[in-house]
Image (cartoon, rainbow, N blue to C red):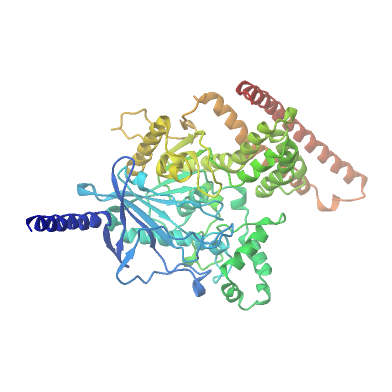
Length: 612
């Protein structure tokens, strides 16, 4: 009997402790919509972080709210289960059950046992690729939050669902940006409940998320909503951003869905379609070789002044300094994977000629289309890009494969980054610039977010999700260093404040364009890398655009009455204009060819030395 009594007492003690432990492992907070139940997680650093996943910050954009601005969420009764991620917003590729229009959720990670340290600075992270799709693996902020900050990640509408635009008040565009803005308002109202400081918020974006951060800096409606910006591998001044017209893409989708017949109620027709039907039309449009415009943010000066989000041309705002000038940490890193990597590997396995045909028939035309090189010099530009990236001696498929990756990186990440940096640095101080080299990590999928700097910041948890066991010792060291510097920037606006015993990170200026280099595999020769980078950036940001303008400038300088005129004098002048222009162009090409030949020779020597 005594043994039974002791057993019962022990049972109730254990049960009581289990209930207490369960409560500690499932923290509950009260926000404006109601109660939230999250979960406590143990990080690699042995610190406990509270996570609240899939929290709705706006009403589901479904039915009559599809293609409408975000609306306030009405809340819920009882306690909301915030222990799991929710679905991604609709996007390609089509996969049943993976995406859902009810997707306007955010997730929050906050250090447990805040004690006297609250309120903590907040990082709001946006990701995305070309505003078209998001990562298949939700980014977890638990490892970064363990550094003593609150981390928030945000889902927002993408592609046609987020950027459908007809240039009217009813079809205004920029819905994905407005989702982000709505999330910022939600964070400002509620983040105190998670230990965060609403007066110390840093926007952090990768790829189109980085473009989003720059756009929020340009918008006049975000004043006071954030105090710092981290811009990773994304540029707001790329040709495909500035020269894009989403109304062209929107009208084509309307035609493909048969809604062009409903001129009085186009939105009604689109809202009656299933999400899968809209995505199928989007796939047909995106796979067409004739498309010219994408679903991207748009200058909305066609709206009433008090309803605009991006009222001015972005390039004009940057050139004139009419944007929110907050401290910026910006840089680029080598991708761990590429969206088309699986296709590239398959072509490479079939041999050199298959990969070369892809580069010449698909990849280079794609780049030319993105850069809007559609003038009379299009063939010359094609030949230059082909000569620089796809002319391979001895049909070396490994070398061509590496060149294909370089083409993708140089054209879409590196050159646009430095074009944007040249405009930011005119007005913004301080601005800190970095480069993270290839870590030698290969991802096993192309459908998720993967870049060197992000793996180091959000790892090792993120790294485990993409198929590796964990960081090696060098990666752990570099990851800890980067986390500390990024956290310092979030807190102090400087990655190496005076009280940190490390080499000061110099500010980037036009007089001293300093770039902090991070690497684990090899030692970077900074001077040589700077020379090579300047050549690559000059090729994309100066030489090719000038070549593209050559014939258009020539045509504009010839009076209309002399164009195609039978007058011999007019024909002579026309020939002289052409001759002079060709001589100038040939001289420029000669110079660049000499430079590229030297680079090609060095690259070949490097590959031979490495045994490729």
